[in-house]
Length: 340
Image (tube, rainbow, N blue to C red; front, side, top):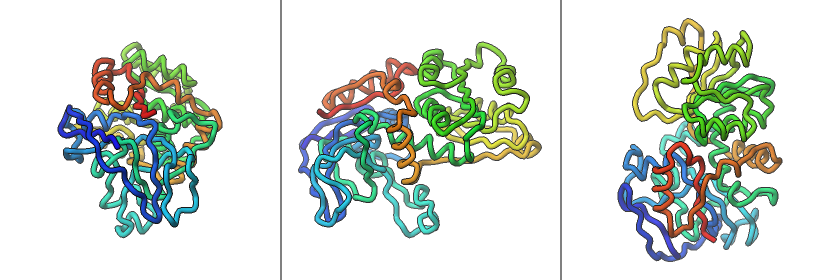
């Protein structure tokens, strides 16, 4: 079978390798779609702190069951599926206390262990989830980032009837906004410096899309949310200016969920955090319940996932996909690799 290997930063090589064979409790997936995310781009640029080369990427994936292990019972040949790309130890404190998604020895397929950028991929049966017929393969490959959004919002509490402020309208910020709406948020506001991303947010049903460089953001918050401001704020950028803005905009007692990945350590006003009794909450990945909810939301037409797909490339044009993302920058929301 054909496999794509990032042998070093900025260089992908294709090679023929032996088709894997599933063990008793595993399934063999024929890979159909692979989404490229921001973390993949960090690897491409040699900037991901926890990935070594060579590495086979691919963690936002959908496909079909091609073969099942002798003891698998949940799947049949031809089932359309996605999977959770986590590899955990099952023994550490987080794993033993229901927090396996932050396992002390966590590895993520496509980063610290092999991913699915190949024609066939073996996954443990318990990490695989069936896709409903209402979802396309492209939407199925986006369940992973949707699950990131579901988990992030869950870290902040119940959003039903709440007013949600999101800083950053990239793919994850957009999905956080869509999921918040799907979970019954009363109103969602999203901010970004890119008018393209803001327009995309509006197309995806987000109530208010604001460019903070084109007006007083605090005034916009008050105008759209009222004097009580936002019930929850989610930082989805990963830069100091955004998290500082979140702290300054928060009303007393607000929860701020840190979703963005920070490459540089930020300086924030902890005096305000203390004085206003703000809750700064981190979020990393997801659990199976988040995947289940993500599939439920996507399968019931509560999300507009196809809107985010800005281009597709064949498997053989993997490198072209990265160059397209570099060229388009903020206009490349979700780029998809196809293996048909």
